[in-house]
Length: 153
Image (cartoon, rainbow, N blue to C red; front, side, top):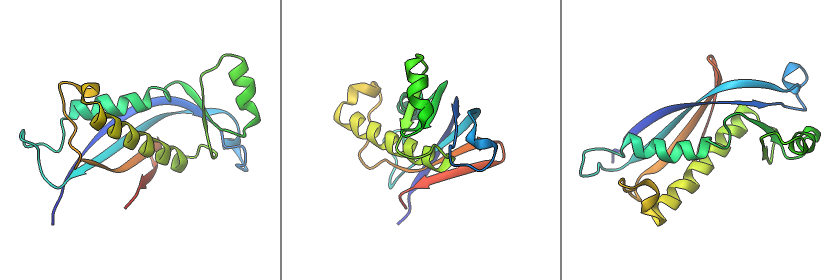
């Protein structure tokens, strides 16, 4: 049985560091991240779409907004507390924020927001989210030449 897939790309800017990295990545640095979100459905809606790209944008942007211009750190990173006390925008993750970990984080946050959109359709009004639409993959480019992807498949 076939399925339909659509994808949309987004960007955000953020800093991070990988404390256990043996070289320069252990120091705070930043990236313009590019995120590609792939969704699929077994059938098309009455408008002949998997979903409207604007509906997808509204949901994904709500997930990316807290990451934009934030310092993304491992929850155990000693810099986290210092930056938070200084009033900096910090996002704490349960592992060092590699591209792989960040792709997984974004994937699960998008799934959470999709579930909320099903429960509260007014979130993406006038768009309706169909329960058969599912997040297939999140690909995250850390540089123009390097990416990591997370999917449950």
